[in-house]
Length: 486
Image (tube, rainbow, N blue to C red; front, side, top):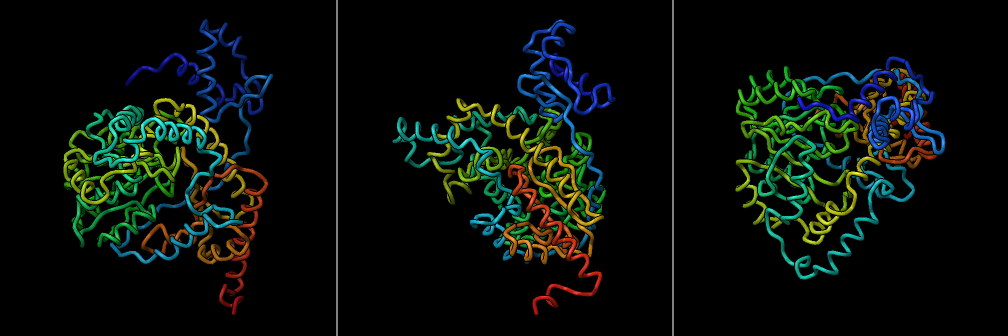
């Protein structure tokens, strides 16, 4: 294991002091000057350590005052239970998903449904400047075809970024795609044929279920823990019973649960899929939003046998609209490039060049640090509000990054009905129904916390909680939504 840097050791020691209660919530920690003198290190080193502690949400800076231990109420709600294994099935949720996506763009609707960050958290001005520069000074190339595997300077920048995920890859091994879903669909088209069976986490990203339906694939859903990710025991049982062609999962910050697999379980997973000759498609779209960077690597970092096709994009960090993703396909790269060449060629030339220029010059790491801090604060605020306003018995996830939250309400609450009533109040949510082919998440919802916490957000959570409580009471008294409407 690589030894910690000096500032990381300082941050680790102070973090331990905070957790042991040496410094209480709301108390001031030693000033930069005092800590520098005590430890005989530079001010810059202490500032780096304090920035690391801010990233962890342990301290907060107060202008002209110093650094204080962050004070938040305790989150006491339980985490959601793990899912059950059910037989493979086909998808029937498309119309509800389309409605949730449409609602997220509708004026006057508070968009808690689609997992899209608010524009406040996107570096719009910096991206605009870089794209404008590209179109002005490199217009012949920017407005020409750009074939697979994509713009080489962008692939070089992506290769540099992937070092943070523990993945050492050459730019020539990277294929630029139209976002992450494009990478996922190409991976599945190369690995499977219509009628094949794939495995996925349960609950899982609804886009994967729809994609499987379009490709004529069956899906076996493997229970996933809100903290540690997919159940290896359930996966082994499924592999013993069915012939699984591919496993699609998000080891870091799964969608919708937000779970992250520990390193040892990632290694166990790779041994398991090797035994059953199952290829893995890793969706790492939220990986750069882990609050504690470097603590957890991508699954691909441990891949020694070429079992993992890695997919990601900049949709959750830079902009969903630029449609720039990438994949590392290993031994399948030639097939991926051939498929891409005769379908989409590659992603848009202008945006590829603009993103490459931004990554070189735009302060991407500074931007990531900012949004990680904001999303950590948002998640905490939304969690505590849900705990306060939702019915007793509501369970809440504790993601270690990203901006999505999964709530498991009392089972008598039908969240499809909650979705209808919330929309009447100008609030969009994603009902649990769309995250599975089964019916076992009909009492769950996913919330988008990529929205600044303010009075409007609190009113939305308060309204949702009130509506959920009403549904609880109506079911308990024998009434239903249809009784009320008709």
